[in-house]
Amino acid sequence: MKIRDIKAWAIKTERRQKRPYLTPEAEMTEHVCSHCNHRYKGRFCPQCGLPAKWKGFNYKSLFLNFLDVWGMGNRPMMRTIKDLFWRPGYMIRDYLAGHHLNYFPPFKMLAVFCILLATTFFIFNIKVLDDNAFIQGIDNIDKKDLSATFIKLFDKTKEILVYFYTHDLYRYILMNIFVVIVCRIVFRKVRPHNEREPYNIVETFFGQIYINVQFLIINIVYVLLTWHKSDGDLFPYNTPFWITIPVLMYDFHQLYGLSYWASFIRIIRISILLFLLYFIIIILTLITIITIGVILDG
Image 1 (cartoon, rainbow, N blue to C red):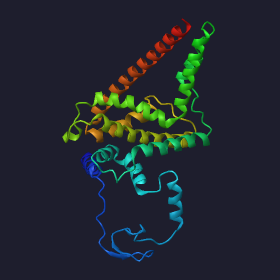
Image 2: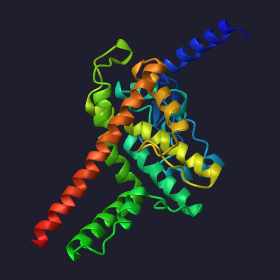
Image 3: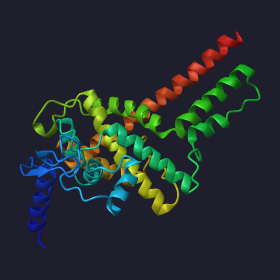
Image 4: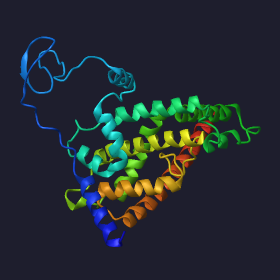
């Protein structure tokens, strides 16, 4: 295969990825509902909601009803999972443009996959708090010369961190606030595909929720393949750099219309700003603990 053929294939593939999902046109065939005998045109009876092509319960119905427990029994969920890896940036762009019915809601999807990840950890007996640097840092503090007030403050801080790291949904939403602030700074002048104004902070938040779902699915697959949790290098994505960087480059290339190199540069900027932001939060937390301890002891 020649280089020219590869380029032509890549261009053709990208055109297919950019194409939004189109809802099928309304069916105009007349039906008689087998349940209430109502005559109607369309895919569902407006009187009782029975599908026009209803053929009774079968094994497929049983499987889809089981998936409904996890919020995965409808087509938008499966389409959203597929598009999160086939056309993630374009899918997010379509959702932000108003194509909501074609995709599973981002917050509900985040909750579903947080539960699935926690279930996977439970099945493989993976301890979420193992090798946690923040909690180990508190445990390694020499407390023999500290007053009882300071010891209580450090213990309370540890309790908060343990709760934080054992409740994935709250952690992802909270940490996404920091990621959104950083992404808004980094992408503040980027006009997506030169078609509209830069995404505002709320649109950026919704986009980051979908990207987090994408990485949650990757984490689940990683655990199933390796039988241990991945050591995240760029929070909140919780995957190694060799996975995080290419996936984010792919996402940002499609979402913002940037080249892969420009996406890589912005990922480096995001990493630096997140590191500085987390460092500032840690320093402010320590200052707060010391200040409260001094006031209470004073």
